[in-house]
Image (tube, rainbow, N blue to C red):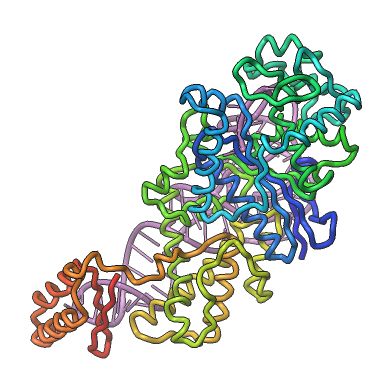
Amino acid sequence: MTLTLYNSLTRQKEIFQTLLPGQAKLYCCGVTVYDYCHLGHARTCLVWDVARRYLQWLGYGVEYIQNFTDIDDKILNRARAEGSSMEAVSEKFIAAYFEDMERLHIGKADAYPRATHALNGIKRLVAELEQKGVAYAAGGDVYYAVRKFPGYGKLSGRKLEDLQAGASGRVQETEEAKKQDAFDFALWKGAKPGEPAWGSPWGEGRPGWHIECSAMVRDRLGETIDIHMGGADLIFPHHENEIAQSEAATGKPLANYWLHNGMVMVDGEKMSKSLGNFTTIRELLDRGVDPMAVRLFILQTHYRKPIDFTQEAIEAATNGWQTLKESLLFGYEYGDRLGWQVPHLLPGATVQKSLGNDYTQEFAQAVNEDLNFTGGLVVLFELAKELRRDRNLMLHEGKTATSPEKLEEMWQTLVNLAQVLGFAVAATDLEPTAPESEQDTLSDVMIELAISQRQAARKAKNFAESDRIRQELQSQGIVIIDSPDGSTRWHRI
RNA sequence: GGCGGCAUAGCCAAGUGGUAAGGCAGGAGUCUGCAAAAUUCCCACCCCCGGUUCAAAUCCGGUGCCGCCUCCA
C-alpha cells in the first residue's frame, strides 16, 4: 500500500516518496500573530498535524516545522493602536496560539521559527538573489524581479499576462513607483520612521512577508524538503513567491509536494478577518463546545474541500464524538477488570506505529488516498459502535457479549487510530464526577436505602412511588437500572 | 477575464468506469410495570442537459456555486 498525495504543483495525485528513506521533512506556513486564531487557522494547524501523525504512524521519522510571522504591518498597526510594541503584540498572540492549539490537542511542531529570529538567513538569501540578478535594490527597498524567474506562476497556474496588476488595490503608490514591474514583490522594506528595523546592506529595514519562509526552510530543513503545506489561500502569491525566491537562489526544487487545505466557510463565504465573519477558537471552546467535537467537525470533511461552519454541524460532531468517547473510555473503565493491558494515561502527541491488523489496514487503505481521514473515520466508528455496545452491556448487565480478548484488540486498535487522528479523552472524563460538596451528595448507603424502598414499592405494584424515587435519585445524578432478574444497579453520572 | 476546486439522502460526508461507506437526525417493531440497555427493520436510481462507453455518481462539454488573481490559514 502506498500513500498518494494531491500535489498542487502538478495538479494530480502522486505517489509519496521521500528524499531520504523513511524520513520526511515538512514545513507548514503558520500564522501572523496579530490576533487570536479563528477556526480557519484551527483547520490548517489541525489537518497538518494529523498528516504529520499519520506519517509517523506509517513509520516515517518526521521533522515538522511551522513558522510564526512576527514582523508585519498588521502587528505594527495593533501595537500602535494599543500603545505597545510589535514584540509585545506578537508575544501575546504566540502565547495565545499555544494555549488554543493545546486545547484542541494539536501536537507541537518540532520548532516554531520566527521572522525576528531568522534575520541572518533572510539577509543572506536576499543578498544571493541580488547577486544572481533576480532582485534589485530601489530606494531602500529590495524587490524580486518576477520576470527573471522563468518558472514564475507554476504553482498557481498563472501567467503574468493574465494577472490583473494591483487588483487588490492594497499596494501603495510609493512602493509602486520603485518597482520595475508591477508584479515584483518586496524582499526587504526600508524602514519608515518609528518602525522596528534591522540593519542590512540596503539600509535599516525589515523583511518582506514571503522571504522568511524561504529562509527558514533552508535554515531548518535544507534546500529541498518533502512537503510544504498551508492554507489554499496562500498558493498565490505567498507560495508562488517562496518558490521563486528559493529556487532562484538554490537552483533546486523547494518542495517535492505542495499540499493545501480548503477554507472554513460561513454562510457560503470564506471565514476571514477582513469579512469579520470569524469565530475564534477560544470563543468556540469557551462556549462549551468540546475540543474533540471541533476536531471531528474538521476531520469529517476531506482536507481539500471547503467546510461550512454551522451550529448544526457542531452539534452533530458533538454527538458523534460522544460515541467515540464512550468507546475510548471503555478500556480505561473496565480494562483492568477484563484483564487487559491498559496504557497508562492518555495519549500525548506521540503516535504509536500501526498495529497492522485488519482494521488498521482498512484505515490505511482509505487514508493512503490523499489523506482521506474522513474515509478512515469509518473504521473508528465501526470499532466504536461495537465497543460501545459492549460497554453498555457491561454497565447494565455486568458482562460483555464479545470475548475480552477480541474486545481488547478492538479497543487497542481504536486507541491507536484515535491517536493518529488526535482524538483523546480528557483526564476529567476518566475521573468519577467529583461531588459538588459533601452535603449535596447522597452517600452510597442512602442510595442503597432509597433503592430498597423503591424495590418494596415495585413489589407492591406501587409504581407511582417507584417512579418518584427514580426521579429523585436521577435529579441527584444517580441513574438506576432494573435488570431482568429483578435486581437493580445504580451508578453516578 | 485568467487559474483551481466543488455539485451524492432531512443535514454532514466517502466513493475516481461495473448498479451507492460512514456520521448526525428520524421512523416502525421486539423486550420492559416504566425507564435504561439490547435487538430487528425502514430512510438516495448520485443538480440538470448533452456526449463517450457493452457499462458513468465516477470520463468529456454545458450549467450552478466557491476560492485565488499580491492582507489572507
